[in-house]
Image (cartoon, rainbow, N blue to C red; front, side):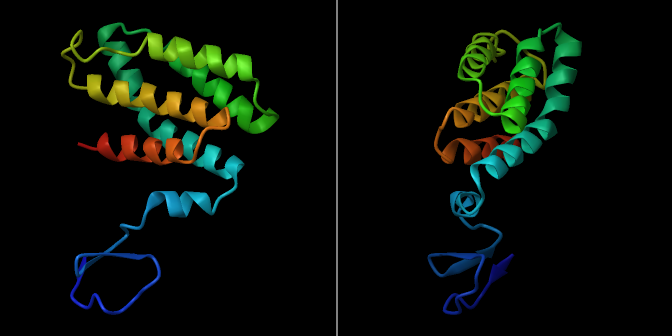
Length: 147
């Protein structure tokens, strides 16, 4: 939505070159206001939105998504019980090693499946004391997966 009065400052509204757009605030600013635990929970919930495409891709192509599901479980466990660094690192390595290569698959959900793997990797990196921009990237991956 465009507003023609850029001289009026409104909280939650981003102004860019005289054009103000609602809902375009910097995601890092919004996320930084949350505790790390809430940021992790937010990212996990966003990942759950990406999961159906990964599962459908796996069913259609035979792609093994088990490492991604195990990584998700490790992240949920980190949220509930604290971070097990060794488990998080090994889960992340396995996920990235097994990520679907867009040149090896021609399935329409290949890109979405890759975004899901990258999202869970960002979540695991964040759980290991990564920066908030990892969580913002998860949100970007989810937004970009909407076609």
